[in-house]
Length: 542
Image (cartoon, rainbow, N blue to C red; front, side, top):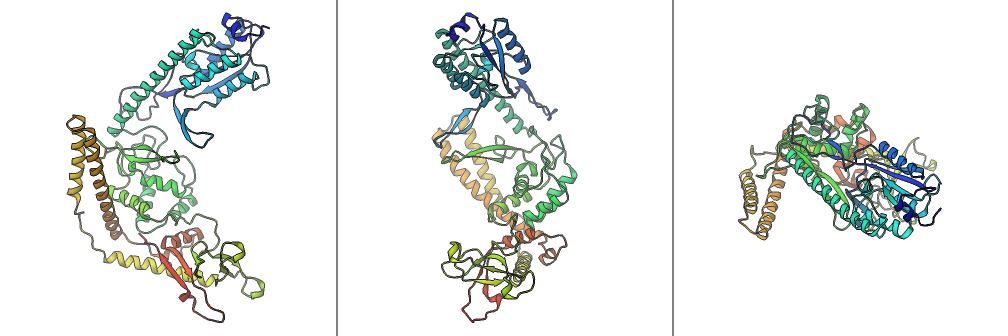
């Protein structure tokens, strides 16, 4: 066999050479006319000039190799893989970059360098259907050129459009890849424009059905919709997230994906603008310092700056949705109660000794204390552990009973406060908010008509949007107060004695009511009633 594999491949002499093929098929969203009649249309098509399946590509590649005396030894399949779309990648140095991710392609190039296929056979070259099946990314093309030029391993196609074996062929491959990349970019731009039009017309997007709606994404699932309304009402009136999902999971209620409910999953559903009838879209936020991405659902606004109403039935009123969003934004991070702690006060009770403040630990009483079976205490860990001072200890059952009374008293106090709240029928700054939104719309219109400079536009827009955010925050707080005053708060004494209530649910109510409960130390030989030793640090119960 000749040593120059590249030269032999250029002549079409593949005799006694072992070849593998790369078969890629990419599905992208199809360009098309805006239609509200078929929301379930997936609209996918096969990209590139060759729309044959991966099986057909393999068959053609094998026939090409064997007709020229070569041996076909392996297939690298890449079904549903884009050779153009860039994704977030963490670099070896810890920085974040955006690259086309094709592990199969990159693995094939590594195998060519090592001259060994994954099945252990010798590898002398790689064949593809055409250049478009190889890559649409200039970086990946340069990697392929490097394999051919530096490692002497040929990469060819069966149409003749790919030539990495000559200088002129390499130059033409770079031009063609750049043009293919541009074509993909243009397609992406048109697809984005189509999606924008779909959003602005309130047409539902694709994907799995949202919880609360049927498969058409428009019609309500009456059973699921009622669950969401009841959940929102419960939260506004002082319930806890874990209490809701614990009940749903006990009853076998599943998410739209068929999974058990979590607190985060429920929050995501209840805070999506879709639930109150707005058309929503996914927005990706990137943290500049870390490059981390976070997806969130935001409202689609029309050209006048008004929320776009979706072509689907709402589940909640706008006021209730805003109250839930404000509840989540203004609530402390603790309070889910979703953990494995086995004592009511664990995680909430803290040592009150000066310069300590450590969380108290629940543990069984030792036999030497001669306590009843099952008795336990809350103690501050010893200094030797590095997690406490060892200076506070308190009876567990008595403390838990006092915690119960404190929680009930807190919710009773909240009920009385709601009864005393007098809320106006209308928010007093509604006209001011409307004027600010008119200013935003006018500024956008003037900028599009080139009546004001970009510098002036963005300066004014920043001021208007800051004022809009301030007013919205004030309105959300007003609506939250008004909605809470209208609803009946939880009867905590009745809720606590519920037959099916779990410890985790009780812990969630405790964490909702208190930031901490500080247990003060006592001197040796001193007797102080337990109720005087507990100092509750309250959260605001919505």
